[in-house]
Image 1 (cartoon, one colour):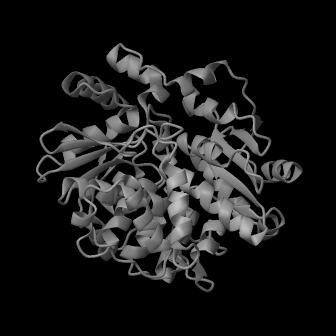
Image 2 (cartoon, one colour; image 1 turned 120 degrees about the vertical axis):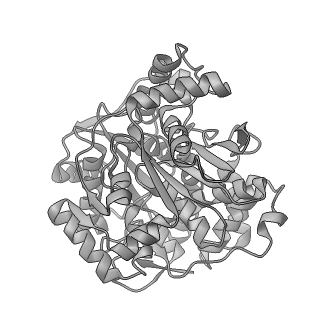
Length: 459
């Protein structure tokens, strides 16, 4: 299995090379050269299988010769051992043909753990046999940073730098990163938005000398292995249900929902996939109008979705453009120059065959948290609430089952839940202990040169 860049330059690379590089040298994102297909009768054969079998199925399909089956089995078992639910990704029935896929039972209580835990083990094995080190820089809108710290803290071949937008994530999210004591973990509070953090990250990768000098790697969802790992919970859900399903996915950087597209490309019957956005609705507007136009990210109650430049949207564009890298590069140049791009009609029609979308306001988010608590007896975090409200509005006429992705533990957003329900969610012991720990981070503007100097001084 080889991987190519969405921008079309350079030769195909192995899974291991794509894993360790993260971003392609031409600025594009890696995608598989061809789509592996699921085995016949997979849904029946794996109906009662543990979650690790689905993770292993996906890993084998995309890893090629980079890791053998025995290595992958060990890595998968290690990655999901820390999850606190025996099903790893339990499926909760809320009503007839309505389900909640709980993705917050990992060590940092967010869906990011599904990919990041596996990524940590993959990196460790690959770097050890190469005798190499990596400097990993992460831009986070909330949960990715905590998951990366949990997965990479203390690993001897890794230096980890995490950029978060100061004041734009919840206290629990911030403390999960900034209370880390491992010497290889460095936290940076950026005076700006997540998009500015992400743009800084991409600028660091674009500097060839810096990238080479510090052996730069990425574990944001620009890293293909992140998307690969997340595809597994779509497959596990479909196997348990025994039929096709529609999914409503709280969406920011487009990685989680693109993992559903990956399952689709592998031959799984699913859809539609609902892009559930908050006030920062660039993806909803793009699907509705055909124009992807940056409008500036505004803080909301669902901060992990406060994004305007959704990196993984480039992967979808590449596919619906018929893998025409030149056409893709032209569109991305338009976006960089003008702050907007127009999706060609044929590509837009192809998107609309699988994707639907909705925009949910902060007030609607609060209302949904309260209504879900009263109606179903659940406590939803604000991102999950966006997914629930979008499911109600967009999938009303679509035959079930409908699955809403619950992307984070509600205790990570206790203030919002309290405002919506009048009750504060119980803090898991691991989160509660964070409130008494000392934080450790540095502050910077979104200045590439300053952050570059900071990184060089600490590796």
